[in-house]
Length: 336
Image (cartoon, rainbow, N blue to C red):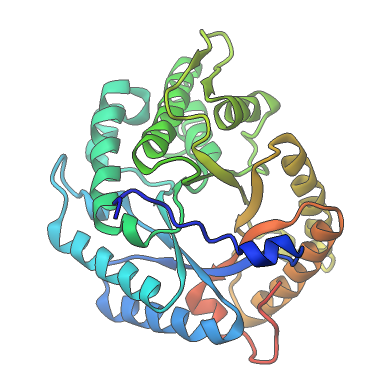
């Protein structure tokens, strides 16, 4: 079997007769705590009886490669075991490779702002993870919230590497687009979701244009710089992932209702602009109680219905952390 092959999970018969194909899943964060990892796996498998069909598996780059160019063999084995168990139970697995924390040794080499560092270190990381779990992966999510990562790290200096410089921001933006190309080159056509945290303050029209050119035309088109095609980028994307992980919607009585209206408009806009790529809801708002989670799931159901009625079906919706979802009342539907 091709180690970088991506399973096609589209239900052919259902597609032919027009049945809704939104696939509902939960989030699981791979970590070093074996007891928690075991609990998360068991909970995810148990939720299959309630129409949960997939797991978005967050992987920490620093966990896999804690020291420069030295992957942690034992951790990689544990990752492979985790994914094999989830897939063996029948769950789709979508690894998320990079959140908002980068390895310190990578930051010391200017991280994504340095093309050589990006090509060398990111490629090793992707290759290490892919060699361990690609056979069992449904698709890949390279970056969970790339706009926040870039805007706060290189444009406003609010997080590591703590830089506020437009030229360095452009360099890092180019590095992230090249990092996407590395994934699509190594893992194949239609292997990847491009996440867009469009409600972040840094999600300007100019920034979204860069992602649009990369996803649909395979180009790196940074304002004020030479536009160029990037090999393997065009045709590498399976869809667009919508990210909105804030909590402000829980601060007002009608906050979730207003959030649903905003998300409906946003989903329509993304579906139209990035057509023919399908839209998935990758990260919904974070909750702190079972009551909030149950209210959010009900809101997601209404959101999914509105989006479907408008002809912009979600391909996937990941509801939230598995440890929170497992506590949702048994009589509440988890299917959308």
